[in-house]
Image 1 (cartoon, rainbow, N blue to C red):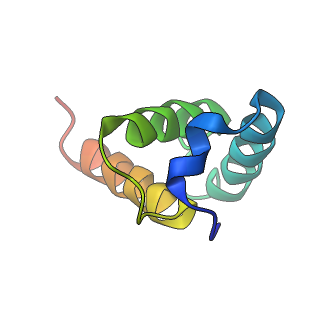
Image 2: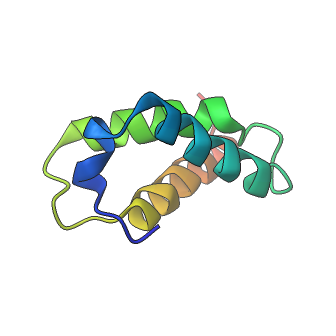
Length: 76
């Protein structure tokens, strides 16, 4: 989780799937919507939005959780 977010786009597909599977399993207790597909989509989007050189994967996961909480609170 301390890996730099800037490494995410260059990670292998297998590493990405492994990481998002673990996040999905850990976070599904909070919400069934927080599955591996959610984390894969969110991390891909977050990593490609802007300059992530100082962010860690932990920061990106927290961002994904915050976005999910916001969307759950105020669905469009």
